[in-house]
Image (cartoon, rainbow, N blue to C red):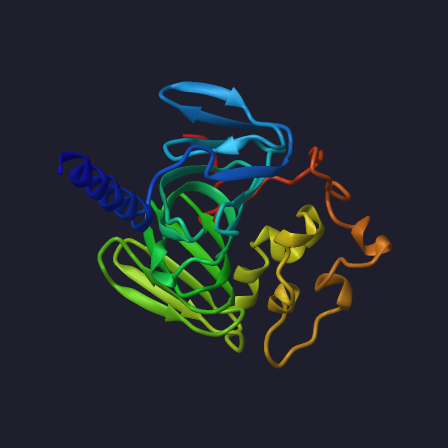
Length: 272
């Protein structure tokens, strides 16, 4: 009888373990790293190189020439741009390869976020001045000292300011701004949107990224709905046009010459 009870207990424990989400080390992998990139945890920094694992509790830091491109276990793609800092707060995985929760805190700088295979409710993106609820999407973020700018490429998202006021971005190329007491949205036909769109580094220079981190049609956001821009401002896809982008092409080992990121408030982002 005792042996039978022990076997039953083991079976129950095994079923619970299979159903429950769990934390794991190295939830993401840095597949592309430029110089001036490091990881901080418990007041200790380590230099980041391509192939390194990224884990919960680590803060990624980049200098003026730095950039990190990360693929998480659920196929979420994240780019940490130059002069940026981002904390991996939570990554709770299920055994089916999806995330129960993926929460990051973009502290300063420039970022690209493309969701993976997990439920939409799993993703949480915070900044000092905004909370972003993701609806299965791709978007870029610029975090300045006093506000957060977001440009949507696919899907939809909700952008909320620190005071709880929120706005919905539902169309490609929508730009949202969140600051203390105010959230705004600029649609593609709005003439005020275009100067804001040109602040997003990866819309202008997609060849700074590995191919799987680029978003098809992102360059179209560098024009207004009723206005056509020269093709050279929209897509750097040919070899000649690639040479026009700062720093040239990128491999998994890194790339020199990534330009610094100018924050929305006119100040360059920096480390924490």
